[in-house]
Length: 117
Image (cartoon, rainbow, N blue to C red):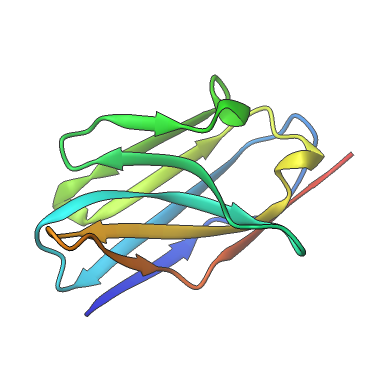
């Protein structure tokens, strides 16, 4: 099994910054990608950013130029640096990991990010 533990969420004013971290443990081999998704009540979970094991990032259009995803393979950790935050970024942010040829999906418990105007 795979365990994902997020940290770094919280409250910030518009224009502020936050950095999310996610540490993976357990059967973390053959990882295809890690990343972040977010969800607000009543809406579907949406992609924020992912990064492949080779380091190639992918961003949602809504966060391009403001968010940066990175990973430390030695620490089995993925980060999301979020700058120029707006109230529209308020959501629960979930860490995600995809593994193996069967593309098994794993999720963290989520961390709340609240941006006030």
